[in-house]
Amino acid sequence: MMRHVELAELIAALLVILLPSFTLAQDFSFSISPAEVHIDNLSLGEAAEFELTIHNKEELAHNFTIAAFQPPEEERREGRAEFPDDSWISFSSQEIEVAANSAADVMVTVAIPLEQKWAGGDWEIWLGAAAESSDLLAVRLYVRLLVSTSRAKSNAGLIAGIIVGTVLLGWGGYYYFRRKAKPE
Amino acid sequence: MKAVITSIGVAIILALIFSLPALAQGSDTITITMTGVNDISISLDKTQWLLGEVAANTEYATSPPIEWCTLTVEGNCNVNTFIVGEDAEWIDNPSAYKWALSNDGTNGENVYGLWFRISGDTARGYVPITKTEGEFWPYSGGSSLAPEDTKQFGLKLLTPIYFVGGRQMQTQITISAVAA
Image (cartoon, rainbow over all chains, first blue to last red; front, side, top):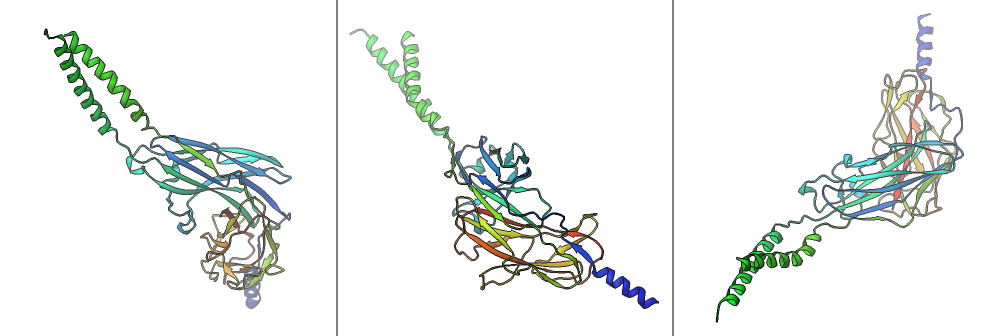
């Protein structure tokens, strides 16, 4: 009797239903554009905005999620470093419903903190969009985002030059008027 | 006194005339470039694998084994594709029980393996799917997929040596694409 119970338990332990399916989803397709975005000369403390368009090519509405991903080093464009902080990128909505055979836009904002150490950066990060699904296979599409910040600039020298120039011009003018006003 | 004021006034005006253009150059113009009107898209002709009940420590392959699903490049730019898996979770209570996805395709107690194989890829054969995004196609610096290119592939599952039976488990494999 004991052996029968053990055998029944063993059979039960061997059985599981993996990857259940009630409907057969087929040929799921969507697109995202543009495929690559370059932001050049982004000043420290400033922000840049652009739109991503998600096109749902299905006969059903789908929810899409959007997030930033750090790509593997070997997949980055040449000369590009890791984007320092994902939190500098924000989306008008990280989840968006796109109706059947329709497109929807997501506004992306890239804001760089006002710290000199971020000047002259050449970075890459990927923005990934995926349809929410419980299917075994899912698709995620990445947009390459390449961001370059403006080089560090100091106006201190220029301002000092203006002051010196003003003093010299003032002195020169004063000297000229004094000489001119002197009686012959 | 009049001469002093006039001189300083003229000097300031002259200094500003010459310095303002230089100061204005300090604020750069931000350029945002969208590469053409490229849109990126791939499609899969299957997204589910009807597996049913499985036994422990057993391999299951899709049928046909390596031409089960077709990936098609539908956008208008060349792409590199990647694949990543995740732990399988108990549908009724995902936080209570899971099978961990192994990082080399092997199995263990409550640890399972997943593999993919691309039709015509004799060099790699079956490749483990892990929780770290890995190369799907191309691999090792090969050629990217061009618009309308297709790749057929199949999957293989290696169930854990031991698992708690009678529980519906669910997992997801994500195939991703980026402009090459």
